[in-house]
Image 1: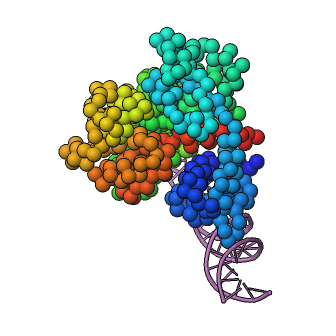
Image 2 (image 1 turned 90 degrees about the horizontal axis):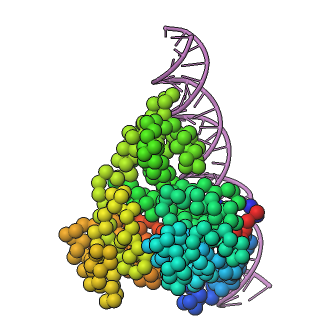
Image 3 (image 1 turned 135 degrees about the vertical axis):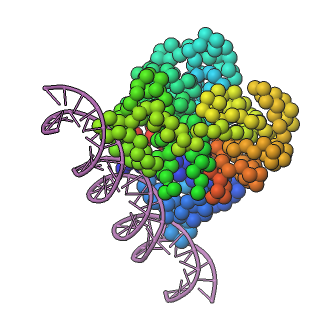
Length: 207
Length: 207
DNA sequence: GGTAACTTGTGAACGAATTCACAAGCCCTG
DNA sequence: CAGGGCTTGTGAATTCGTTCACAAGTTACC
């Protein structure tokens, strides 16, 4: 497949959310213009984004809400369940384990890991925290799909190296660090420090 | 000031982090090439990013680590303390209140709000959770700078409208919703669902 | 069935962001 | 102080993403 821009993928994710919203409201069809307005973009952008994957609409009419939602789920890989492991049973990690939004969207938490003896063996929202040292062995049988990293920045790189060596091909990192991964591994960062600094930049450099 | 791309601001934030790392390691100067390698970008990109704000380097030598860090802090508005309020005392909100990274980088949590009687009046990491209804009144005297939104998507828009009406000009939202704010308000999203879906997209559409 | 009102899908035009490439400046060595 | 080795700062070239604009297809109505 032709390379798809990250910005496009993120918008598709948004469109899907809006479609689900429209579905709930009982709308049967929706135009690119309506989707665009809901998402703060333009109708041309919506159509272009979709056009990378096929043509799903009817001229003169728009898109069938239910059908387009299905197509998007298919495109985004949401027709199967993805196994998540949470690495780091600190405050953020524990909050995520309990986060219901995961399961709602087809992501199921399979296990929680930590390296600290204060955490290993204790329960977090129904999960017994495992020793990170046993990850490689567990991964062979359990084959988790996505690792969510909620550990401090200082040893995040070595942990991610270990995860990758154990076969993980997708990482969502909350660690405020710039991690290196080989090209076959997908990495996304949730870097709060960066977002906050973007905000203080905006406040400081306001016109 | 000329408009600065969001991607540039985010990279500046990264560079600052790397500079602080280099400073700790005792390096006195650094070249754009070294910064680039650390951040997975190119030296031309680093120089171009910096050039929007002035010329901070010495030809043939590179940048003074300490000086450039200071300049970046100034540019990013990190020379003052920013008052944060956390809106939503659920799992994520509570985890953030306790997050030490805030204070380390000059952001101080001033208060925590919620709308649920189960939360209001109770303590979260030393903060007594306040009633969201009293936000407007509090804001007049306390003048918080940044609101961090950790509430469910369904009523996020009305809450953000209220925050904006109360004078908030910067919002970091964890709510999985596309919020509308007037142009003078800066808004950043931390949308985990979107990042996860980008990952499952990558896993699904792998070459 | 003809026409008016809509809406999609998509090349082409445009604009924004990144990369190239090089003149200019700095340091070190002999 | 001349020459070689680096590195910056920045216009120009390029690449990438967005927007425009319109032919083609659909529905509704008379």
